[in-house]
Amino acid sequence: MNYRMLIYLLSVILLIEAAFLLIPLLVAVIYGEPVLPFVITVGILVAVSLPGVLQKPKNTKIYAKEGFVTVAASWVLMSLFGALPFTLSGVIPNYFDAFFETCSGFSTTGASILKVIEGLPKGVLFWRSFTHWIGGMGVLVFMLAILPQGGHAIYLLRAEVPGPTKGKLVPKLRHTAIILYGIYIAMTAAEVISLLIAGLPFYDALVTTFGTAGTGGFSVMNSSIAGYNNAAAEWIVAVFMLMFGINFNIYFFILIGKWRELLRNEEVRVYLSLAVISVAIICIQTYNSFSSFGECIRSSFFQTASIISTSGFSTQDFNAWPGLTKMLLVFLMFTGSCAGSTAGGVKISRLLIVFKNTLREVKHMLHPRSVNTVRIDGDPVSEETVKSAVNYIALYITVLIASALAISVDGFSFETNFTGTLACLNNIGPGLGNVGPSGNYAGFSIFSKIVLSFDMLFGRLELMPLIILFSLSTWRKR
Image 1 (cartoon, rainbow, N blue to C red):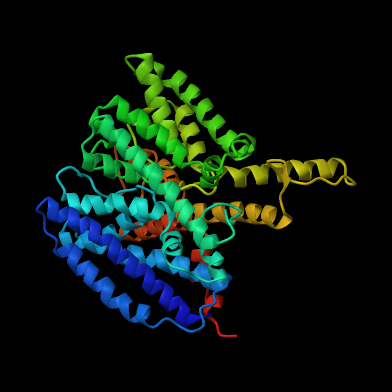
Image 2 (tube, rainbow, N blue to C red):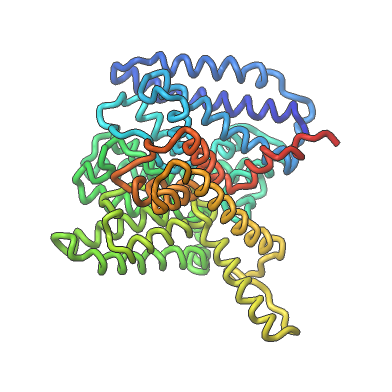
């Protein structure tokens, strides 16, 4: 383990977080709000990180283990320090609640313990939503985009970017990170402009876009997007939620004129097909609940886009919808969106690999001498990737069950415990029961909030980085 390089990288990450905090500090200044919570937090981050940044080690090589540990530790540390403005401002006096809210922000989950949002300081709410935008693409990707790193930095990208496979769009890793963030910023700007045209104030357009781009779902309205009572804004947010759930590599290929990559991509086809089918089923099931067919289509499309993209925004209390509709939403919570997007969930590409591998095993049992290969987009998938996908599903189910059992000590219903855990592990936010769109996570004990906080980080980092971080074998000297 290259400890000196690990300390250096973590120090850089914390210094970047301090720089990010200057933006909500400026917002607080603009609105005449107390800035001391942000000033103190920035001061602490600078004091902690500056010594490590100034002592860059001569040996800058990092490998897989260092990559996983750096990514996992940076997300935990960012959440620990990022919670300070909430506590210091008095918005969330309990630090464990503030840690939960911050983990929810950075992991782009959108689960909240706040019962009343409107009227809270705009600077603090800006930071709350801004954590979604930071966490959406990943702070390690941001660091790779602005700082030159050695060739071994690919291990940082692989540890942070979600999906069964990771790679570079172009030969140089730094250029890949710049391209990804360029697309991310361009799409963010496009949504802000669209929402301004739809009539939302600039501040609201900005924080809503942060929640959409990061597929997080934090809003500055008590009733989420429904609070604006703006049909055009709902359509815009819904479309962008779906767009941010698509692999960013596809947008890169579109930019360079390779449209066929979009058409031949199985994951995107399945993703959009699931969305269309779900909208149709939800619309049929809930038609009598709306005053017009147009409102029914809009609400069905919005909630489908919100859940499948793991954004968590809401315009309806789907907790009160029919049983089939709720089961469909739970299924979408599980599948999530595309690999390489800002969304959470198991990822459709991973489920496709596992499904096709199952079919291959069935064929092999019927025809033992046959040789079959798992293929995605017509290309063969390596056995290592297939094994990784199968192992991930098994590990995911283990963490899901263990976490649901752990938080059951609080005495809530099975519906609340299971969907709450599912919503946190898949980075969605709202579940069913007490944690539905009209509820929140405030009623859980401190123990359960800590469990769910790490579930959010587990989901965002796709399990292994945190497992490696907390594994004793990682830190043993050999």
